[in-house]
Length: 94
Image (cartoon, rainbow, N blue to C red; front, side, top):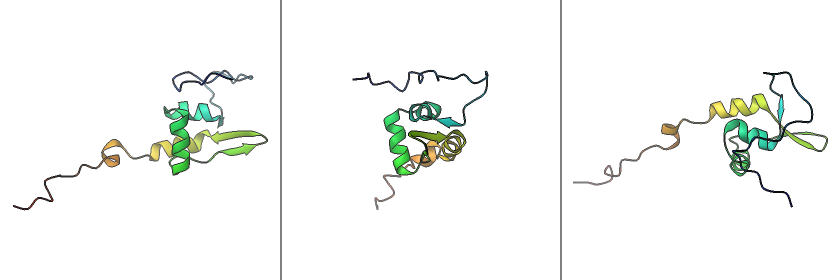
């Protein structure tokens, strides 16, 4: 059985090399998760919740469009929007 990879480890090098500075258009699941800085489990959850795009199928491969992943990441809410603070005292009458 293969060892589970931590999201902090870089994905395995591709069998082909792109010129330096050129990013691939398609990303594997682990590459897409690393691209946005989350674990593969969290990335799967984000895809299920609609926060990240669904993948494309190319033959037997499952590939995420790097541009769609980046666009979805930029559209995620910032921290203050994600966690609105509720004034716990607003429901108390005097």
